[in-house]
Length: 241
Image (cartoon, rainbow, N blue to C red; front, side):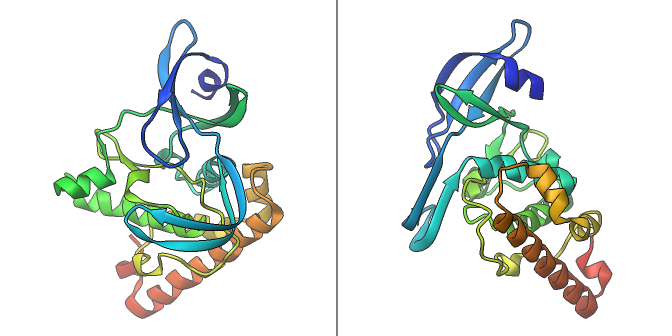
């Protein structure tokens, strides 16, 4: 899949029509296989930015970054945590004079916004909840400030795919989404604890700065401490699933 994304010829392009970063939908072919992919080349930095949208009140952010490289960094860290199945496969590629992540276009049933609007219940609430627990921990670890319902995709077999981390990896280390972090996957907690700076550096290459990696480690420490506190208060069976 990675080799195909890196080498297949782009035969068609069009706007996806969703998202503020103007992603493109490309059709790729290597002569034997044809598949679509998403391309996102945003790479913006502002000293001060006023942000609004997604039904949320406008906020001002200092040292604002909106960058495609965070998608690649998120994939690298997801692999360290065993969560790579919750993201489309990404590669870095140049297209139309711009560099950005090219991701495999998955077969999607709907996004979370549509599911909520139509009040559709997942066929297996227990499996769905476990996926939500993993996603919330990952969003807190990466400090993804734009984890909105349009960035949560649902496949026909009801697997969750997380997309668009271009506004993640902030330098702040305070725990966000703390109220949503009531449970954690049994295999995810030890993998979180095992994260190291060197391991993250190797996984993300040059997509994160040393300060951004340090912030990930500090947030990891806070998340682990948060869950250990919950375990002490409520018991392991109530927190670890």
